[in-house]
Amino acid sequence: MITLEDCLGLCDLTEEEILAIAEYEHMPEMAAIAYGQYLLHKEHGTEKIFEMIVGDIREAQSRGDRQKIQTLLHVLHHFIRNHPEAAPKQHPWHKVL
Image (cartoon, rainbow, N blue to C red; front, side, top):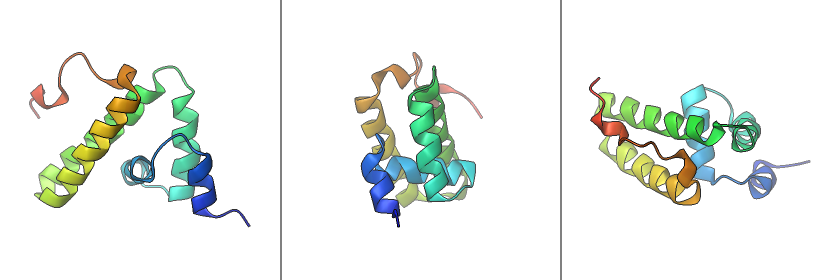
């Protein structure tokens, strides 16, 4: 049987990035692995993953969950370092909600 860890090992995203996708899309982690891998190979897919992580950060901000915000900011930083094409021209926090 293929485990979650096996699938993570075959994925080009980190476990934390997968968890961010799963949270944003409200889907199981295994499905998030497949979706994340799909997005990595789709035009503008990395930008979509970036938006998901930012969406999770904004949700954590609305709940006042500082620990989650800090964790997701680290996830976002790591994602941008590995996928610089996903970084927006303007910092996402400049948008007024």
